[in-house]
Image (tube, rainbow, N blue to C red; front, side, top):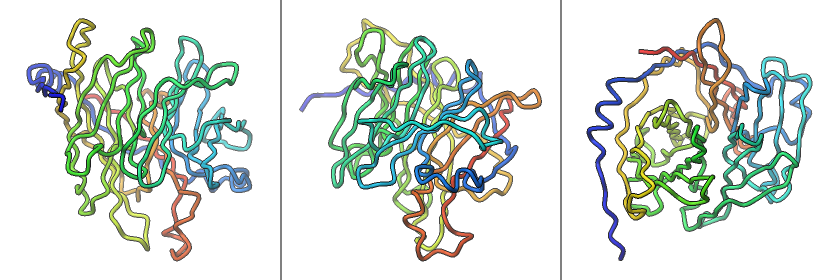
Length: 322
């Protein structure tokens, strides 16, 4: 078995965490499916990724598919506060998309997919400006529906990905990779510590990822509480600092990340199956973080009362610098 060296990047993590951090406070939460227009769209639901593009002033939401093939669709909105008009594209050859990120270098999008029953496999793909799809890399052999759900893209065009669960059942670490788009190689491999039982039920995992600051990633951990008659989820956010990228370093080295929980005031809102997040527009002088939930096209709601059915929830948070 190949030996993998684990490196605690202690000086970097401790120094950076003390120097820079932030907290979050609820601004507004509502259900996108309350829109009469979206209620009549059979492809709207299963929202798994969201990206706000300031350069274009538009919002993009990707779905993980309602039918047996898990065909994904991409939605474009001028505003999520007024959803009367929008555009929708069928993403040919993209099934069960889980995250979406915009690359301003060439106006393309990057997505990750998650497929399979029993064992999960998937791809990282590029949606080009001309609507063609290019596969960047593939992965396999994760537990059922627990592959790579999260993506982030940094200013040096390194595409970061994080697995929802560890690859092996008794392993406490999720995989984090940094793929260098310019060189088409994996530059960084890291491990993220995960407590799968954090909400009292063994279903906690990473559902999304964002670049918070230079070499700082924001992780979204989502845990279903196991209550089948309700839609109860525990949502927590953590930051972790990445090691400095050294192209000359041994590619076999795997870094162990140190995480710090973000203080969040959810304002008493009942959180659903949060899967996507993006940095939103500045509102009243404050930067915002916007999260969206996957309602699974309500396929698990047959025995639930109306108030407990899953929602396509939009949660807007104010970012407060410490």
